[in-house]
View 1: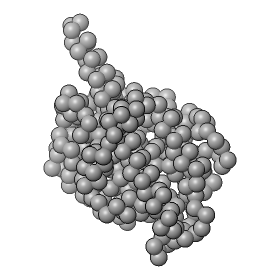
View 2: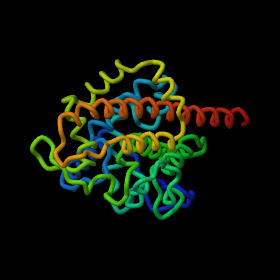
View 3: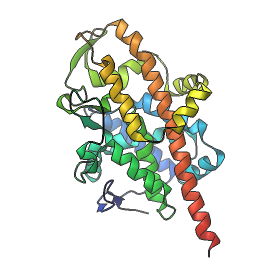
View 4: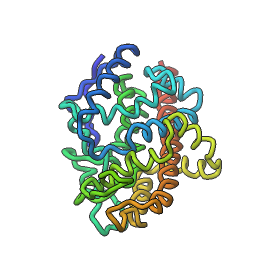
Length: 301
């Protein structure tokens, strides 16, 4: 079954066919894509594999049985499959059919800006941004009339983009490509600010995504998690990311000190936790809305 993907801004069709295949075939496909992805230079890919899968795993563990049943109906039967879904948006962005999705992973603000606001690109059908992407795919998820393939794709993008918007440099400055052009040294190796936040600070913890998700989930403060879940505006999440940048995220030296790591590693864990909690709340709302819509439609027949 294939479906053309709707534009994130206008709902117009773009050529982006999606075919959902059997689980064994899908696993083989993901292995091939991941192997190919290792050969492609990475830019603007938030959190890396460990971070994105950690966020998804935290979200899965917070979902209600009804929401998990809805996801299983879309082919996401287990926690591991759901967490792997968080990688899909990065894996397909280099494909011609999904080239349009590249700008949806981030938003740019002017250097010196104190507020994210709503960048002009977010409402530009030829560009887009992570804010508009989350809004659009949340609408697809909530639509009881959307096809299963469209809803599955919406879930895949949402699982990834909610993670992206919580990575501070995906809500950063366009003039240095979200820190990609700021070259640094970290523990004796060359890097850049974006890569440092994508992967290297996470790697300081030395955890697999399963272990990190388990540890962060166990450390969640119930009252804080309740506040995060109640925050349903992606613009507010982006503003939090910008405020981290404004608060000193850009280092004073080209050499990243251990003091910098000590200061910002806890922030990395906090952003991963917040993203997981908010992703669960977003999916819970969207899936419940679609479920109620389908029930209402059935009852009128």
